[in-house]
Image (cartoon, rainbow, N blue to C red):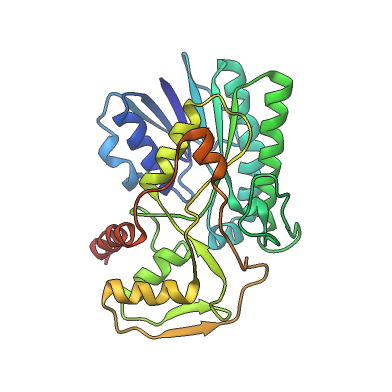
Length: 309
C-alpha cells in the first residue's frame, strides 16, 4: 500500500512509519515539526519507500498519485504541549482532520484517526468501554485536547456516513517507549529522567490515581490490525494492566537503581483519577492484545533515555 502518516515524525508516528515500511508499504510522512523531530525518522531518509514532507496539515494537503490509506496522527499529545500550544491543538484536531479526510475522499483511501483515551475525560466508570460517553470539562485546561479529539471523531463518522469513506477511530491509551521526548510532561519520561539524573520523582496529588501503560510495539501492531480490518466503529487500544502512580514511581526507582526520593505536588486541574481501557472489542474483533511486559518495555525505554543524558 501507499500510506500517508500525518505526524509521522512524532513518537508514535515514527514507530508507525518504521513498522509500515518493514511490512513492505510505501510511506509519506507529513509533519510540521512543532512537537515532532526529524531525529525520529533520519534513519528512513535514504529509503526509497519513504518520503518526508514538511507541512502543516491544517493547510490544504496535496499528494500526487494513488493513496491507499491515511493515518492521521498529527497533534500535540501531552498536557505540557497542549497547554503551550492550545490553538494549534484545536486546529489540528478540527482543520487538520478535515484536510486529511478531504485527501481520503479525493483518493478513495482508508482513513484511521489517532484518537485518545482523553475523549473519556476524568471517567466516572472503570474500565472505560467504547460506549462510555465520557466526563469532560470543555473549558478546563485539558479541554483543548479532549474536545479536539471528540470533534475529530464526530467529523470522521460524518465522512464515513455521508461520503462512505472506510474510516477507523483508534482510542489510544497511555503508550510509551523510545523516542518519547524527555520533557514532554508525561509520567514515563518524567520519572525515568528524574531517576536517572538523581532528582526527586514528582508525584501529583496523593499518587493513588491509576494509569495503564502500553509499549509502543504492541500499540503499532494494534493500529495496523485495525487498519486492515473492515471495522468502522471506535476501538480502544491500550494495556488494561493498571497501577497507581505511587507504585509506578517505586517501580521506576527499582529498575533504574536510583536513590531519588519521591515528592508530592498539588494535583493539576482535571487530572484523571483512573485510566484503564476495556479492550474486549480489540481482542474479539482484531485478535489483538498487548504482549510486552511492563518491565521489559520500561528497560528498553530506560536504555534509550540513558543514551540521551
